[in-house]
Image (tube, rainbow, N blue to C red; front, top):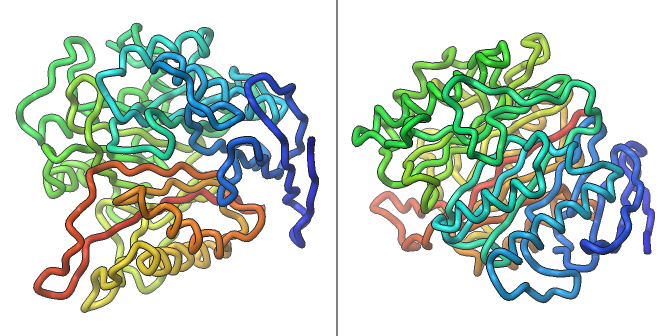
Length: 414
């Protein structure tokens, strides 16, 4: 069953498709929002077809009837079957997938996940980041995907000393971008993790740079980076070492996320996206915002805008997070995100994908009620995770509250 609906903006067509792993693929056109009513959250489109790329929301292990397979291996298979069904609904195949992020509640299951990924992506696997988090909406795994429509220039990039046992390519080149897998602060040959946090950061950045160089690029080409780190890496150390690699004020957009764990006992991992042609790269910064040594608010890769994660922080001389609830903090977050979109002459209607990080998944329902007000009937694809145990919700001496949510986004200028 399929329902077509149009918005005032003619470039976007809403398409609702009933999907499960066993449902035949439904062809959709560029610029469409793919919605799966069988086991979808109505606040997020299961996928958005943005023309050159398709962005697929985080998929869990539930079947079309909402039930869960009995054991972990079957649950991973089901999550990937759900991804496959949506990819095919866009008229593509798994060969078109260029990037995945997998969130695991138990990082000790990494080897099993790695093996099952290899069954689905046996030919030229996509770039991949695999992360340990506290909770995902449908336990125990969530997987999101980016797929490219044109396979003509899709190829894997391999730097020296890459572990061939991984079921993800270190980098995937497309006609205009490079997607870089999670590069950790462990030795690429031995897997040993140095004791010194600064050495771990440098090693992870060196590994990312080796992928870039294998593709004929460098850090200047990066448009978006996710530093994922555990509590073992002090933020000041990470920022100081990181800033050495980039031109001041012209850094990539960034979402720095503290996670529960990383594969191989690593404490830091970098993953992200680079643009092949530097003439297609342009950083965006509101005029009242000073330049930063670590992150640009947003960066264009051609017509695609990658934006840094924002929370409910109120900027200014007495700035801070003052709202006490997730919903109230989210309204300030959306204001902060809109400032950056407007600087790029864009708005929320052009957002195709978001990553949402909640302090407590118990707040998800309230979060979604506010979030939905900004996107209307055809929302972007989205991935929701709780990366850590909940924080203590208590004001400090300056009446600042801890951040309870963060949102990063991708928008397409059409």
